[in-house]
Image (tube, rainbow over all chains, first blue to last red; front, side):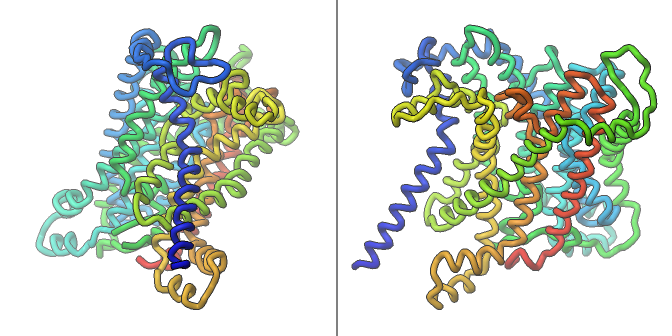
Length: 279
Length: 306
């Protein structure tokens, strides 16, 4: 029975260790959730309040009403949805073109990947001048189009790998039987790729939803997405930490829910299609 | 089930060699790249050759490569380069080993593996400004839970992000927390793709666990490890949000990395010419790394079974 006991011990130790690890990675998140329901006076205390004396939901009402949370939520939704929509439409075509026709060869593939990893600061100055000349600073148009700079390469690159996974035999036989190239794409390959397209669209939604750098540079007061509201509220005196935590929670919640829905696409999506799992 | 490192010229070529159809499908994306990338980059090159300063009411003059020469004598550039290098060192020295250990830990789990992996991934997928807010609460030196816990053990009460010595390590801790799970995710996918019979054979041979890890896992995982490291190094050049929210580059310039310093030069001092020169320098480095990433993904046979 000894080897059995040793296995059991080893497993118990491993599960215990994993528990500690998960606690470390979730502790900051839990602290935010707790702060979001703490009543005023318990936000910053010595000693810190680890569990609120009562659940104070008014933080959320205050966050949404008084501190621009509602506008932030709506603006974030508009920007992320519109940018995702544009990127997916443009990106699906590009992905199929790159995956099936090797359009532009390795040079174009390399260009797309370079754009994907381009540091945002590299285009920040020219884009700032560009949007300001057009009088589009602090508008939805500018931010939505700016996000496609990253999202189009992302969608193209990841979906390209999915299109490559689809057996081309069906499309080939359709072509042989007189279908046009458009029909082979639209009626055969596209329907097969729908689950992947949805997953990639949701990931690109997450990236836009979280984006911070361009939102800071290109917007001021007319367009305020959730991530940029946070630091503006963290300045000055009498900071309403409970409400800020509530806004942060509102910003984090949809992303976490989506991540759980997308579990099986996370590896390929987050590695930008360079690592394939499953199939 | 299996994982493969995607080849750039993988399967799926549609017979015909020459057709305009591919270019038609590509056209909208190409127009966007031209408008959003090629044009701004070309413009950035032009601006980088001028003394374009928005705050000085003097017309921008063409000054050749003087902005680029200025970079090398700029102490703030060198210190920001050091900060960027620290973030990269954090990726290689801390995040990779920890992510690998986590992946091994998770691989051994029979149940709830996906659930644990997804829970661990929450720091990676939430907005980094949200993450930075969370840590700002933990780091609060008077009322934060971190210093409370340190106090329980009679340890010091550091000021974390406000301290000249601890500000950068604090940011590295946040970066570690944010991105180690990402490392874990990619390496776990690589582990799952390893052919089971090799490991079984090694185990029957009586190899010890660390020998299996060192002699079999690491060599077989090399392509995935390469991709994960290059991806993260590329991303770490972009680190901006946590610096903006937690330290604003301070105290002094001790936590200004290249990206943040470029932002300061361009959007605080409005020295657009110099900022563009800094930006182009970073672009060149990143392009070289992206090329390396393509090389790594180009060897499909090394990714394990397909």
